[in-house]
Length: 290
Image (cartoon, rainbow, N blue to C red; front, side, top):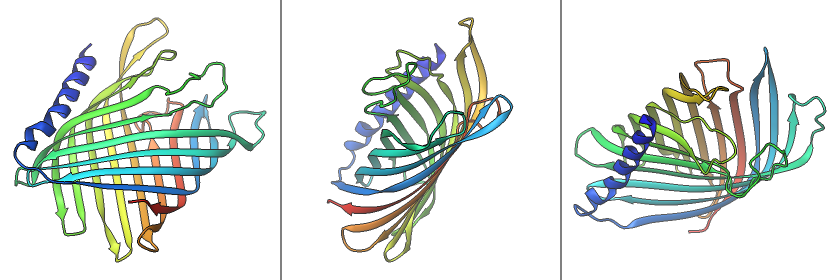
C-alpha cells in the first residue's frame, strides 16, 4: 500500500513540474526522427541452481528513434521514444535440446523523459519517467503472456540534479532522488515492484567535429516487494545497475554510423536471482529524417 501511494505521489509531482515553469518562459521544440538498421549481439548470464549459463542473441534489427526537446530560460525537457524490432539467432545453454537458428522475433518500445527546473544554481529539481514494453509478444510458450502490449515496466522518480559540466557542446550531469518501479497491464504473472534511491550520471557531448558520444550510468538501490508461495508480502533489498553507451559518427548531414554498448544487472547485491547480467553491443547505419 505504501508503495502504491509513493507511485501516485511521484506521478503527480512529475506531471506538476511542466506547468509550473511554462508560465515563466516559453521556447520552441526541437524535433528529430532517426531511422536505423544494423545488427547487435547480446549475452545474458543466468543462474540455475548452483551453475551459471549463457543465453546468446545475435539480432538483425531496425530502429526508429524520435527526440522531442525544449530548452527555455526556466526549464529543460528532454523526451526520447525508441522502437526496436529484431529477428534473432539464439543459443540457449539452459535448454539441453536447444538448436540455434533464426527462430525468434522481438520488439521493444521505450519512452524516456526528464524534466528539470532551472534555478540558476548548480543544484536543480527534476522529475523523470521511464516506460518499457513490447508491442507484440511473439513467444509461443504456454506460460507466457501471449498478447499485444506485454506488461509495461514503469519507473518514476523525483530529486535533485547537479550540473558538473555545462559547455557549448558538452554536458555532464549527476542526479539523485527517490524512484518507484512497477508494472502495468500485468494480468497473468506477478511482477515485483520496487522503490528506493537512484543515482544517474549522464554525459552528452562531442568527441570531434563529426563524432558524438552519449553515456548514461544508473544505480537503483531499494526495496523489492514480493509475494511468496503462501501469498504473504515480503520485502528484500536489491541494487540494480544500468550502463548505456552510444557513439555516433556522422558521414554526411543525414547519414550516420551508430555503435552502442549496454550492460544491465538486475541485482548486484545477491546471487540468488535468475537474471544476472545482460551485455549488448550493436552497430547500425542511421538516416536522419528531420
